[in-house]
Amino acid sequence: MSQPSLSTSGLTIRFGGHTAVNDVTVDFRPGELTVIVGPNGAGKTTFFNMISGQLLPTAGTVLKDGIDITRMAPSARAKHGIGRAFQLTNLFPRLSVLENIRLAVQAQSGDGWRFFTRVGRLTELTARAERYLEATRLEAVAHREAALLPHGDQRKLEVALLMAMEPDIYMFDEPTAGMSLDHAPDVLELIAGIKADRSKTVLLVEHKMDVVRALADRIIVLHNGELLADGPPAEVMASQIVRDVYLGHAGAAA
Amino acid sequence: MKKGTLTVKAAALVIWALLLFAPFLFQDVRQIEVAARIAVFIVLVASYDLLIGYTGIVSFAHTMFFGVGAYGVAIALKHMGAGWGPVLLGTAGGVVVTALLAVAIGLLSLRVKAIFFAMITLAAASVVLVLASQLSGITGGEDGMTYKVPELFKPATKLFTDEAGKVVRLWGVQMNGKLAAYYFVFVIAAVLFWAMLRIVGSPLGTVLKAIRENEGRAEGIGYRVVAYRTAVFVIAAVTAALAGSAYALWLKYTGPETVLSFGIMIDILLMVVIGGMGTMWGAVIGATALVMAQYYLRDLMEVAAGATAELPLLPELLNPERWLLWLGIIFILLVYFFPAGIAGTIIDKGDRKAGA
Image 1 (tube, rainbow over the protein chains, first blue to last red):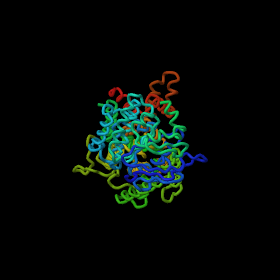
Image 2: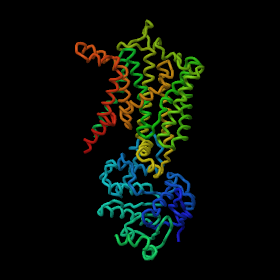
Image 3: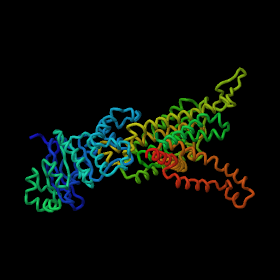
Image 4: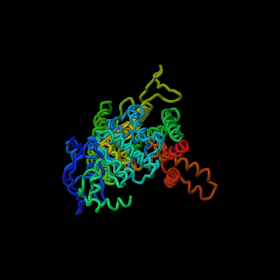
């Protein structure tokens, strides 16, 4: 088995008396797409926040390729290859679609401190941004303000931003939330494409069972902040304890 | 092409052209005074726009940096005598002190919430104002100080002389030191403004806008927000200090009222709001509009009061004594009809029409 690209050990966070995530130890490997499931309030997004740096854990560590990133700022983690998309659309609303993507490209290339070159002159940056624009089929709206896009396109832009960061670890938090049925497949196709590149590690928080079945190599279940189950999809979905706390009624609803 | 942006740029360029030819177009001491003040305030407002309009940083310390730059030159000239050495030394001193202050304030407090940052800058500016007023041995205290400027900028200096040794006139304008001083201020203002245009059009400028739009996501895709904020705070502060140094050379007088007072800070805020935040070109329009209003509204009202002398009530209302009331009314109307500032609103409306 390959070395884990990302691992958490004993990851715990408390808010006052409430333990939102409790002692989660888990490894993620390149080429593997792990879906994290669990009822609302299970700590999925909090778990994500500790990996991407929006929250610092009370205890435990996060390692990326063996490097301890537990206390790093989000920007430093991004440089170490952690890329995160958010559950609620989280873009640069008054900038154009192209500018949004170019920002991610230029963060990755380290051109953010150039203060005297006109952006338009950096054709290399623009060309790279346009590649992601094409990959996500957003060419037609390249010069539209992000805030003015329909919701489905905003979700796609969210994915484009993440792809443009060229991370090793892709973290998606309900990427199809609020999308209409005809738009969701576009985003799922993009994620499947990322998964097909066997060098990337993909983490996905998702509720929709059809999405989970289509994409997951592995499922982990969080419940009340604790790791309840971890294994291949068929095995996890079949286990009685998981059915009882979560998959039972979610499965019935789907 | 984007019609709104084009209109605003054209208007701003017309203003710059008028400033360029101001000594020839307006041959009057007061008018040149106004032109120089507009040039200096364009830089001051544009550099403030880098903070408030582009990055979303609210600071009340902008006059402090302007003042440090001015006092640097003033103190050097006062205590070392006229000459280019003191000018350079004073400017460099002002810039170094400004940069250190900006780095200190930035690193210590740009992590905190915007409102606390604004309070900290307000406190720092108050401290500097008090220091400048109290340390009268160095700064001249409340009275400020007058000093001699390098030979080149003295009104009696003849730039070009004819055979008789008299100063040459070009289209009726004397080629004297006053003219040299004006163009010195103009060139510095123009270069600084151009440099800021380059910054907002650069990759760094895009990062600043990203921080304004969504700080968390900017950090998330890999930009160290505190570092970028501190950097732009230092850039804006040093630019304001350089504007202050130029203004000190022009006025030949530096005091708390002319370069440090909170009245100036309010002027800058008004200019940036009237011009339009986050537009850069709006600084040109805002600074021009407010300086012109401050200098000429009273004259205009005097004419209006005279013209309406026969009518009831109107001459009373138009009495030049009441110019501040009218200035206030004009502001309210401007904010009402141009909610994004003059430049901002024209760009929004014009571009939307063209884009749709």
